[in-house]
Image (cartoon, rainbow, N blue to C red; front, top):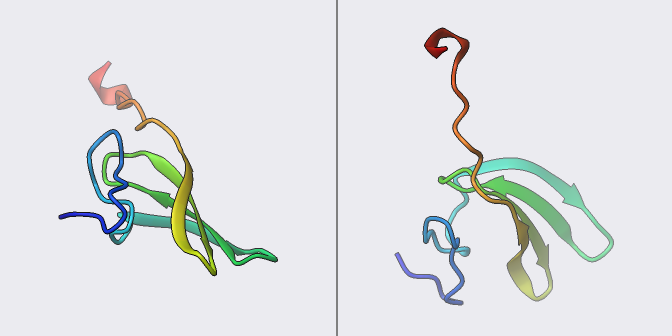
Length: 72
């Protein structure tokens, strides 16, 4: 899959313009909307949706796998 803007997740390569893996929350702002999503690789992303379109303005590294208590 390619991204129309060429922007992709630096951790897994998923295009920023593609449907997010998981919607975490959405908030209306004076300029549009702030959308928090989680990429398939686990990276938490902050997206701004306004008159200019959608863009990822911040993202975290993917979460480190957590060991379960049963595996300890």
